[in-house]
Length: 299
Ligand code: SPV
Ligand code: MG
Image (cartoon, rainbow, N blue to C red; front, side, top):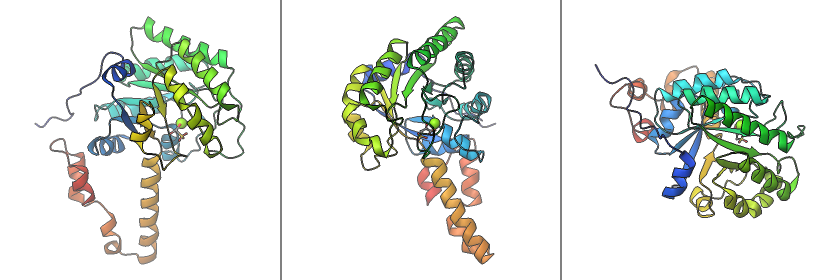
């Protein structure tokens, strides 16, 4: 009987503190299901970003606080069953209150997640790249109290989960000073890592404040709007984890849409066969042992 699950090499301890101590720099890739997590692991990346945008999109929903913590939990569980990579859960704004955030933190921790990111978008959150969206932020002290509430609940239950505090201050047009003040407040409230989000219009501000943010603590970024800068370049600036946050769902959706358009036009499988995994490759991917490599899958 083959092993159905790979041996898990889960980090115990403090993920970000350990990464800093070891001088570790990682790339995390956005995922929304276990299959995507397997592909990311096979490709050799070091972390999984369970992306709110990707999970929302995979359900045909906009990224506006519609996906619930229990839906995210189900994905954490399915991924943890197949991958030993660190799972960083994008928990939006914590789902509305201190209690919802603390409950989600405990559930994600118990399911084997490594970290949970919460952002200071007011409820209901809007994805950072939605144009003309209301950009109201949560009051900074209210948000800091949320971090304390999550930590207290985790500690009370003897659970360990790294907390990533993300500010949307640059996205909201509030400037670098506000962004840094919020990051410092969130760190003092107990966040293990800091995340500063930006869009095209705030990319310069982001690059300017990045060194100061990195002096406050371990930093996580998602440089969707600075696509020319490499992950090693960001690492050299002091960033601990670079997230390519939404590449999975965008790639799969685009390639599937293209294939379907050609199939609709031609009505013949042979015309799209070269765009498909073979059935054998699919079986190899989902077989217990041995699993197929990325090179084999894209051959
Ligand atoms: C996500 O992946 O859901 C993120 C990153 O929060 S982004 O949507 O790119 O802002
Ligand atoms: Mg998100």
